[in-house]
Amino acid sequence: MAGEKKFSTDKGDDLFFSVHREMKGEAMLKILLAVDGTSKGLEMVSAMGRVLKERKGVKVVLFHCVRQTATLLPEDICMDVVESCKIAYDAQQRLGQAVLKASSDRLSAAGFPKADIEPRLKLDSIDPARDIIEQADIEGIRTIAVGRRGRSQVETLLLGSVSAKVAQYAEGKIVWVVDAPLNEAENVLIALENTPEARTLCEYAAEFFGPCPGLDYSLTHIIPPLPPEFWDDGHILNDTEQKQRAARIEKWKADWTAGVQRCMAQGRDILAGAGADPQRVQTLILPTREGVARDLLTEIDAHKFRIVVMGRKSSREKKPFALGSRASKILQHSRGVVLCLVG
Image (cartoon, rainbow, N blue to C red):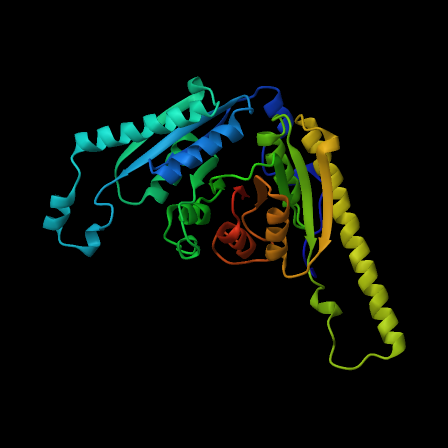
């Protein structure tokens, strides 16, 4: 796009610590897994156990919020009703511990080591999304996993849902939104845009998934529509002008593609450095057909990707919110995937 940054290979652009430091055993990775005890939530926990069981050096912090007066807020009702609806402290403890135990059992049954599970409990929760983000801040955890409980298209559009709020407001975090049951294919799609953050996506994917054996990777880029400078400028072009414009368009496409290819070559090296088989890393550069987000959804559905890694915010969007429109569309419409939204 006009004025948009090109791919960078400058290591000064890195936003996360390098994969190589992690491979040297600098610190065990932690992921905060928010659980709710519902049947859908427990299915998500089992799915996460299967995803993470092959990844050595990961600790899972199981976090459950026991909601107080779950369907009512103090500012909406009189205080005597609030007091009568409150759940007793010991009852909250029993409920919370039961949820944590059931979730821990699901994780270990899926193959994740029980010794690497750490339970955490929050009582009297009014806003679980805020509590999840705050707990991650307290423990210095940058990766949060939440389940998407929506059972219908309408429910996935509710901005008040816990998963949507965490994805929107967890600034500086990576948010995994898990839609269980997951697709069966052992594959990862890394959706690259034409920005310096493309390297960051590859580094994060390598950090978390590179050491896992048997995964296939697709570094995928959708070439955006032509920038305004190539649009019709208000008059009918003569033959010479048409040829000149066609030549400029072809040069733009060639330069753009070359930049993407350089980034993808670098991404393959990053993944290989973390343990991924280079022969199982494919690159795919596609023209826009229906729109970048819709075309990504088509790829995800066609190849049944299990894991999708993408940026949380498009570089072209200057809105004050953390979640960009493309990420929001993928969040709303993708099915059967672990969607990793990287800031």
